[in-house]
Image 1 (tube, rainbow, N blue to C red):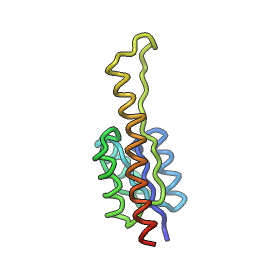
Image 2: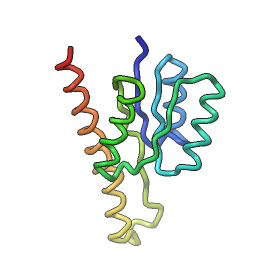
Image 3: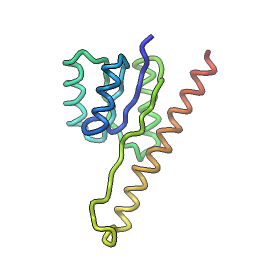
Length: 132
């Protein structure tokens, strides 16, 4: 049985690399990103390599988006085995110049995103476990 993985922030960069490695290892992978154009391009590239992938656009800082991501995964592939909380951002301003708005956005993506993603994955893992 093929395993299914989600990789957030996987339209480019490190997330794309993680997703590609998982595909090469035989996983079905759900690519996820806030950048829809780049996400669609990555999905196309992966499908050309005959990887089993779908793309789901979403914002990790939004709880509903994270739960939708897991729902779309299970609807398409029947299960979820691995959830990689990869999406993240950084402040590129000098430390003393980081604004409250920047800090709030950092927290929304880097902390809330991980918590919401983990909650969504845990919810489905528990449901899958009780089904046997």
